[in-house]
Length: 164
Image 1 (tube, helix red, strand yellow):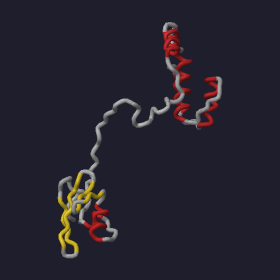
Image 2 (cartoon, rainbow, N blue to C red):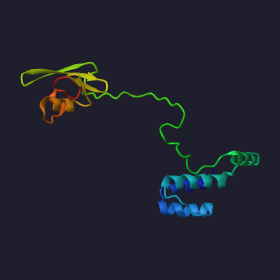
Image 3 (cartoon, rainbow, N blue to C red):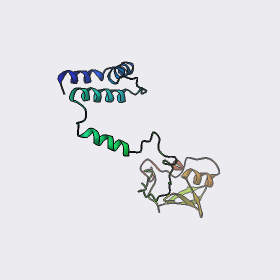
Image 4 (cartoon, helix red, strand yellow):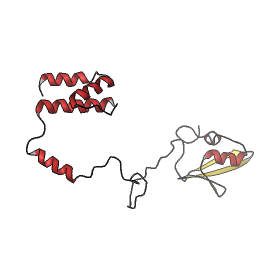
Protein backbone atom coordinates (compact mmCIF):
# COMPACT_ATOMS: atom_id res chain seq x y z
CA UNK A 1 0.00 0.00 0.00
CA UNK A 2 1.32 3.43 -0.87
CA UNK A 3 2.19 5.77 2.04
CA UNK A 4 -0.53 8.29 1.15
CA UNK A 5 -3.18 5.54 1.18
CA UNK A 6 -1.87 4.31 4.54
CA UNK A 7 -2.12 7.86 5.94
CA UNK A 8 -5.67 8.18 4.60
CA UNK A 9 -6.67 4.88 6.27
CA UNK A 10 -5.07 6.06 9.52
CA UNK A 11 -7.01 9.34 9.37
CA UNK A 12 -10.29 7.40 9.14
CA UNK A 13 -9.86 6.14 12.70
CA UNK A 14 -10.32 9.57 14.24
CA UNK A 15 -13.32 10.59 12.13
CA UNK A 16 -16.83 10.84 13.51
CA UNK A 17 -19.67 8.73 12.14
CA UNK A 18 -20.97 11.71 10.16
CA UNK A 19 -17.54 12.28 8.59
CA UNK A 20 -17.20 8.58 7.82
CA UNK A 21 -20.62 8.56 6.12
CA UNK A 22 -19.54 11.53 3.98
CA UNK A 23 -16.27 9.79 3.10
CA UNK A 24 -18.21 6.61 2.27
CA UNK A 25 -20.36 8.56 -0.18
CA UNK A 26 -17.23 9.98 -1.84
CA UNK A 27 -15.45 6.65 -2.10
CA UNK A 28 -18.39 4.44 -3.11
CA UNK A 29 -20.50 7.01 -4.96
CA UNK A 30 -23.60 6.27 -2.86
CA UNK A 31 -24.85 6.99 0.64
CA UNK A 32 -24.34 4.40 3.36
CA UNK A 33 -27.28 3.00 5.29
CA UNK A 34 -25.01 2.10 8.18
CA UNK A 35 -24.31 4.26 11.21
CA UNK A 36 -21.83 1.79 12.71
CA UNK A 37 -18.45 3.51 12.99
CA UNK A 38 -16.34 0.36 12.84
CA UNK A 39 -18.24 -1.03 9.86
CA UNK A 40 -17.89 2.24 7.94
CA UNK A 41 -14.18 2.46 8.77
CA UNK A 42 -13.54 -1.09 7.56
CA UNK A 43 -15.52 -0.69 4.33
CA UNK A 44 -13.82 2.62 3.44
CA UNK A 45 -10.35 1.27 4.32
CA UNK A 46 -10.98 -1.81 2.16
CA UNK A 47 -12.18 0.34 -0.75
CA UNK A 48 -9.18 2.70 -0.49
CA UNK A 49 -6.81 -0.28 -0.55
CA UNK A 50 -8.70 -1.76 -3.50
CA UNK A 51 -8.43 1.49 -5.44
CA UNK A 52 -4.73 1.79 -4.57
CA UNK A 53 -3.66 -1.79 -5.32
CA UNK A 54 -6.29 -2.77 -7.86
CA UNK A 55 -9.25 -5.07 -7.50
CA UNK A 56 -9.49 -8.72 -8.34
CA UNK A 57 -7.33 -10.12 -11.12
CA UNK A 58 -8.78 -10.74 -14.57
CA UNK A 59 -8.71 -14.45 -13.84
CA UNK A 60 -10.51 -14.06 -10.49
CA UNK A 61 -13.34 -11.85 -11.76
CA UNK A 62 -15.18 -14.54 -13.78
CA UNK A 63 -14.73 -17.05 -10.96
CA UNK A 64 -16.20 -14.58 -8.44
CA UNK A 65 -19.16 -13.98 -10.76
CA UNK A 66 -19.66 -17.74 -11.11
CA UNK A 67 -19.64 -18.22 -7.34
CA UNK A 68 -22.03 -15.32 -6.85
CA UNK A 69 -24.50 -16.80 -9.35
CA UNK A 70 -24.48 -20.15 -7.55
CA UNK A 71 -24.88 -18.65 -4.09
CA UNK A 72 -28.29 -18.33 -2.52
CA UNK A 73 -28.42 -14.75 -1.34
CA UNK A 74 -30.35 -14.34 1.90
CA UNK A 75 -30.91 -11.13 3.79
CA UNK A 76 -32.50 -12.87 6.78
CA UNK A 77 -32.07 -16.41 8.13
CA UNK A 78 -34.76 -18.92 7.21
CA UNK A 79 -37.84 -19.00 9.42
CA UNK A 80 -37.26 -21.20 12.43
CA UNK A 81 -33.46 -21.19 12.11
CA UNK A 82 -33.02 -19.90 15.64
CA UNK A 83 -35.53 -22.20 17.29
CA UNK A 84 -33.97 -24.68 19.73
CA UNK A 85 -35.08 -27.78 17.77
CA UNK A 86 -35.24 -27.63 14.00
CA UNK A 87 -35.75 -31.31 13.20
CA UNK A 88 -32.13 -32.39 13.58
CA UNK A 89 -30.58 -34.00 16.61
CA UNK A 90 -28.32 -31.61 18.46
CA UNK A 91 -25.93 -32.49 21.24
CA UNK A 92 -24.17 -30.11 23.57
CA UNK A 93 -21.97 -30.49 26.58
CA UNK A 94 -23.93 -29.27 29.57
CA UNK A 95 -21.87 -27.31 32.04
CA UNK A 96 -22.67 -28.10 35.65
CA UNK A 97 -22.71 -24.85 37.56
CA UNK A 98 -22.14 -25.43 41.24
CA UNK A 99 -22.64 -22.65 43.76
CA UNK A 100 -19.32 -22.46 45.63
CA UNK A 101 -21.18 -21.74 48.87
CA UNK A 102 -22.79 -25.17 48.77
CA UNK A 103 -21.17 -28.48 49.67
CA UNK A 104 -21.10 -31.17 46.99
CA UNK A 105 -24.27 -33.19 46.22
CA UNK A 106 -24.82 -35.97 48.72
CA UNK A 107 -23.74 -33.87 51.69
CA UNK A 108 -26.15 -33.77 54.64
CA UNK A 109 -26.63 -30.39 56.31
CA UNK A 110 -27.57 -30.53 59.97
CA UNK A 111 -29.24 -27.71 61.93
CA UNK A 112 -30.64 -27.59 65.44
CA UNK A 113 -33.90 -25.64 65.53
CA UNK A 114 -36.23 -25.40 68.55
CA UNK A 115 -34.56 -28.39 70.20
CA UNK A 116 -34.91 -30.65 67.15
CA UNK A 117 -32.19 -31.79 64.75
CA UNK A 118 -33.08 -31.02 61.13
CA UNK A 119 -31.25 -32.80 58.29
CA UNK A 120 -31.22 -31.68 54.66
CA UNK A 121 -29.54 -33.61 51.83
CA UNK A 122 -27.87 -31.59 49.07
CA UNK A 123 -28.92 -32.89 45.62
CA UNK A 124 -27.58 -32.02 42.17
CA UNK A 125 -30.63 -29.91 41.34
CA UNK A 126 -31.91 -28.91 44.77
CA UNK A 127 -32.38 -30.22 48.31
CA UNK A 128 -34.30 -32.97 50.09
CA UNK A 129 -35.90 -32.47 53.50
CA UNK A 130 -38.20 -35.03 55.13
CA UNK A 131 -38.79 -36.84 51.81
CA UNK A 132 -39.71 -33.66 49.87
CA UNK A 133 -37.62 -31.93 47.21
CA UNK A 134 -36.95 -28.20 47.33
CA UNK A 135 -35.29 -25.97 44.74
CA UNK A 136 -33.48 -23.72 47.24
CA UNK A 137 -32.18 -23.67 50.79
CA UNK A 138 -34.44 -20.71 51.43
CA UNK A 139 -37.48 -22.87 50.63
CA UNK A 140 -36.21 -25.52 53.05
CA UNK A 141 -35.63 -22.91 55.78
CA UNK A 142 -39.16 -21.61 55.26
CA UNK A 143 -40.57 -25.14 55.50
CA UNK A 144 -38.74 -25.65 58.81
CA UNK A 145 -39.46 -22.28 60.43
CA UNK A 146 -42.68 -21.15 58.77
CA UNK A 147 -41.13 -17.75 58.02
CA UNK A 148 -38.77 -16.39 55.38
CA UNK A 149 -35.09 -16.99 56.08
CA UNK A 150 -32.00 -16.75 53.91
CA UNK A 151 -31.15 -20.43 53.46
CA UNK A 152 -27.40 -19.91 53.55
CA UNK A 153 -27.63 -17.98 56.81
CA UNK A 154 -30.06 -20.46 58.36
CA UNK A 155 -27.72 -23.39 57.69
CA UNK A 156 -24.55 -21.39 58.48
CA UNK A 157 -23.00 -21.68 55.02
CA UNK A 158 -20.35 -19.12 54.12
CA UNK A 159 -18.80 -18.16 50.82
CA UNK A 160 -16.87 -21.43 50.32
CA UNK A 161 -19.31 -23.91 51.82
CA UNK A 162 -19.38 -25.40 55.27
CA UNK A 163 -19.91 -23.69 58.60
CA UNK A 164 -18.66 -20.15 59.23
